[in-house]
Length: 249
Image (cartoon, rainbow, N blue to C red):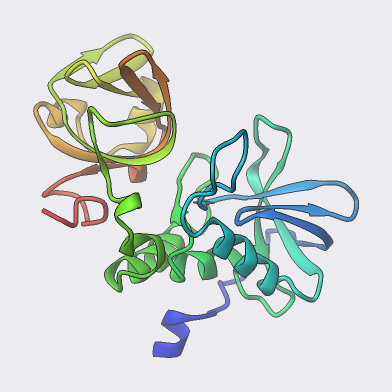
């Protein structure tokens, strides 16, 4: 059982979900690969450290994540299970990846601390298993969870790109289409009203003056960072939600 928790437990098979066999031609990074058909596959439900590009050095553990993905798929074959919404804005196929023996690739990367879980509806299949895998690595200080580089940033230290951030909310605006949660003048978290109504199980007013932690892809304009989310997993209420990014409290 312990070995199962730490390593390679096959994920349950959902009979109604189709999987197709793909031949791997190239590993791009820890969460992206190219098939021999030319199709680009982005592993859904996780994010791994960024490789070097545009003059920026690789983030810590980026090479380890890429090499681990390559090792998992060393036989050159993968079972591809398309996400509910199967294309990202770059035209890549969003999919869960399994080895022919049933091992869920995303889950392995999370358990090794080489990825963090991401939930973007409607692509939240297997989320409970991915959260469990991330939590196991987090509690063991494994991989990125052992590095100060990946510690949640303060609200006034946020840059552009994927990050973990801690903040105290100071203002809530409830518009016709969007709920806007601001932390001073440095950070805004946006959630569509329709997404909140369908997925969040508490009132947005509950976040008034709340300490939170968020994860996701931030945009930055001058001194203000903005994060758009549509799933409650991406926003943690410190002291209320299950301890993840707020675990230092």
